[in-house]
Image (cartoon, rainbow, N blue to C red; front, side, top):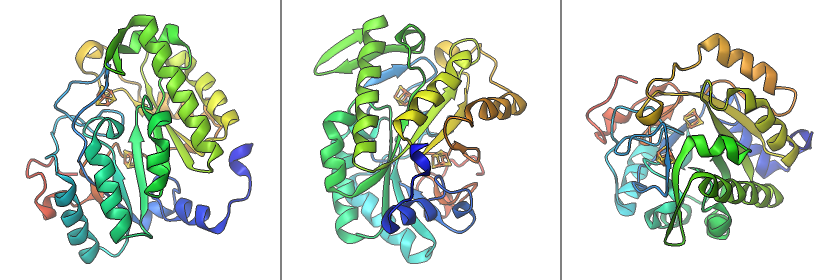
Length: 292
Ligand code: SF4
Ligand code: SF4
């Protein structure tokens, strides 16, 4: 498969020093998320606004949103104390690409720390529009949350999509989002970026469809595939999340098509440190920590 082709040394570094791209790296290298992106441009039926983006984060604790200058100060403080931080990521609390502060933050960090791996996580709606700007600031690790490749399923997952000053609903919204997600993923792969796909496992909604998603994105050449169990909220609050055994089984069904990420910790948008060993409270950014 495309994802097993040999990589150049710089790409290998972005795999081997990124805790979400390499299961080995998670023991040695950490990441620093900066929560500079509060706004979102879609409404997922499992998301309660005011919490971190469920796509990439544990709900229940709102991250304190930082301005770009404050984010840079925070990174200065973190890298001075923690030499194993190799990755700076923007994962919310909304959609990074929907917030101009994301790009200003990337610019500042790339200027001061040109060797730091920059990473973003997005719903993909604006990926085709923003990919040049991401490339300009050296972002080459991109996560797209893709919950369906069939708009008939997508329309059950999204209430609306806002694009170009217009709000779309139903099938039209799902088609628009999907076409942008696929175009963005294709372009990112073409530019040899490392693309990770997050798929939220929503029993009774997209579960039977998840291997199809894996097959499609594997054939497109994405790097890895991360299955995130639903956190029941908002319109999906009554859906029972998958059990760990069901999640493990889903990884097995998807593994023939694309490399699986099985160690995701559903980090907060302000997580800092090794995966599963976050230290955000030490840096005083939240103060309402859930103990992670
Ligand atoms: Fe919420 Fe993230 Fe979906 Fe936006 S993309 S609605 S922040 S879960
Ligand atoms: Fe990595 Fe998962 Fe945490 Fe994102 S939420 S930084 S993919 S471990």
